[in-house]
Image (cartoon, rainbow, N blue to C red; front, side, top):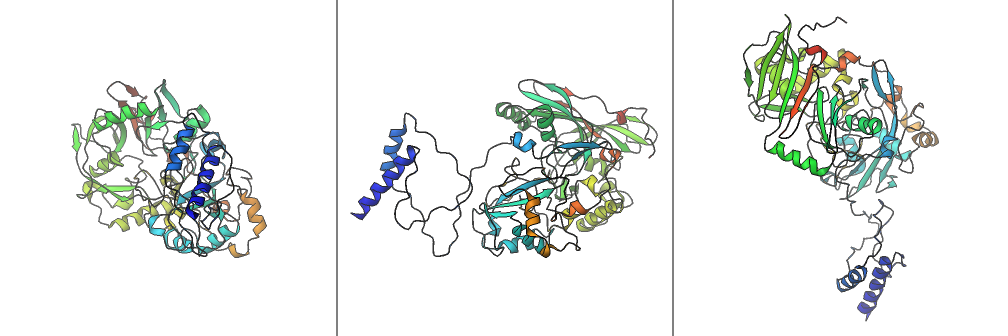
Length: 527
């Protein structure tokens, strides 16, 4: 009898839900969902609505696990949007301004979001912050929690000792500062109903990653050219300029991806290297190993991935050579690492033409340092020149723990949902194109424990989950970037002499003009 009553009540619930009317909850002690991430709207019943109701009535009632006394409810994970699509709400987060030949982004509030990683389950939130995100002292996270900037399943975090569970959804609101990039415009080389091809300036990442979001090709094309919902077909290193191609539809992207798999695409680069490059064609097939995803450093190593690059000298001006490069594989920094190995690094390469590699600058793979020593030497060399920004990293990135590649809460790259800065539950992923970036570290002279709570909340301006540039000229009490004076890189420092000249497929070919520094009679100006 009790079973029949419960079944009737459940059937009434199903029918009422299908009609768009929310019935009162059924009796019993089954757990009710608490306030969590918004759920998708229920569809209006169509012609098949009645059949679906009958089908639902025939199915067994869904079982909800009863929660023990005091146990915390975790909403089911939300389905993330497939692909990358930026809309007006994302572009409105902040705006650009131009100064000293640089494109700059006004600071803005932004939500980093992630599901609980598998390795975090059973650990306290405080422990996760203290062990995996050490760019910030624990006092920062306590202050951020008091300010309402840390949320768990869309509820403000009141206790950092809360134990994380699978599918927990975390949100961290930060005051975000982006590094400047060159003010050179993105030139449209070609556009039709299928593709758009641009000439990318040096220093611009292709898509949001690390500390970059608005200062990326994807965002600038969307904000300034109205080009949205683009599909990335290939990528260029941040410091590499040249031909960059996007598909406008998933079908076109799939077709060209098939050409990539069939090795039907040809890429041609041009660069200016140190010294007199050999006149004959040179083929380099040295395997390449990633040393650090965070800093973005690779080297030749027998344990690396196989690759091949063809080089042909185009000109020599007495001190440097212009070289044509034809990569047959697509490893990270492949051209740059192979040129370094050959003893002819790119003239102004901020990684592979540095003294940190030793007196021969890595020629023949001779470094004489461990990977850790090499990374430390590279960082110190740039730190002494106040040029860490050229690498796309800051002091805060160097203070964060380990070589974490997943979409962590304090502010590293978005993985599965770069639009919103969120990642899937219990997943870890490596992406050699990304540089992890944690939230800003804090100076020791800031007393976080004594910050006025009301002031924090008023400056945050994000208690309803919205982000944006409201009050960007005001100083944020939790952000060290607001109190740090940095030397801007010069436009010259943001140009590297490596350019993607041509991109050719089975049914297309796109070229850009030769850059000025690749002209035969070019001479570097002092200063």
